[in-house]
Image (cartoon, rainbow, N blue to C red; front, side, top):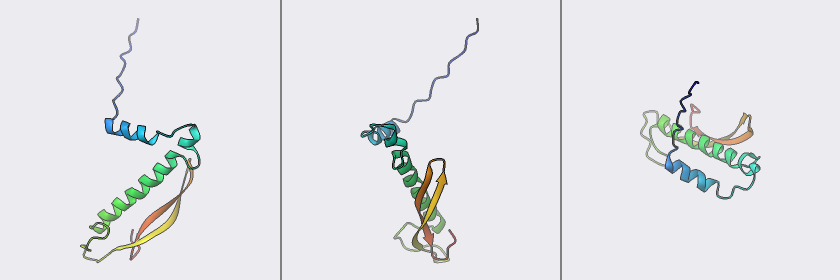
Length: 103
């Protein structure tokens, strides 16, 4: 007889479990999660845009609305609309811009 040792699943971070429970509080049907305006699409948009803002802060060396601290005096210049296309469909994004367009 062959015995297979079962690998225990890693327990998720309790804070992430609370967050997921909160996000799924109004979940009724699969479309609420994966539909055209479902939670996954909304979260993807929010996370990608937030990541781009964090990258912009790192790129410029200063936070939004803070004093300019980089040698080139490069600053934010609003946002431009772009569309991310994937298996989930088209996702409109607001991409941050800088004055000389180097980001």
